[in-house]
Length: 297
Image 1: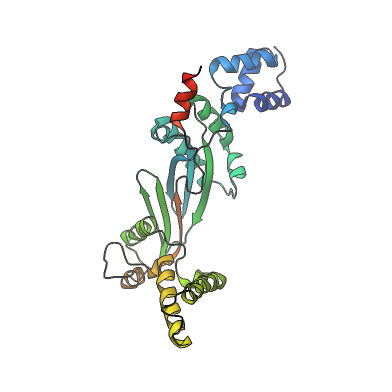
Image 2: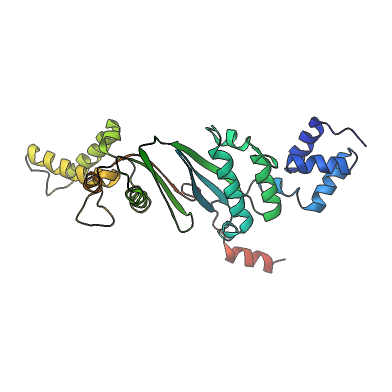
């Protein structure tokens, strides 16, 4: 039997995209012959993972796991929403969460290097790609910690198409934190309050409104004090949509979130929201062109 070295395994992995354990087994079965090992992997369907790297994965799911004073939120992408419902994909999502929440990883690269039963989390993903048949990626994650006197609120919409995680201080009622997570998921704030909003952001929004006002012939001749009041009024309305505490509470249209929190002696300290696929440019298939091309063959 040939002595299978780490360098041999690494070289085979780079050529095939297969996991480390699969590469080692292939080399052992092939007595160290790389070409035979590649054929062995191909027959097992494992070497196909690398071929999928260029595809676009904009579907998938996000998910949240809470363990005591620590929580993790992740987004794992697939090529189709059909695969995101697959039991193997869901198992991969669970493995990813369990692996990340027990770590101190800060980047996706660090997370993929974490140890799993397959070798590393990256190996687990490569193996899943080979079995499921689509490109699957860990897009992003965040680990959030809280104090003993704080509460996590977690909410996942449509099975994880949208996920929101909040940290609330001051209330012992878990439903308050859950309601704030639902508020974040549904109303999409950018900041907890205006105190968090960079001043340059406020000035940018103010300048846009001033420019809009200057081009409005009906308001052009108004006194500067009046125009300034109009700008500040419009600015206040725009900024309240960005800030959680200034938003209308989704369960009571007569109440703002800030008042709801005050009524419950609570304060939102932070939140994270993931919407699956946001910012990823999806491939648009031209089915008419595909049919025409097939007809010419």
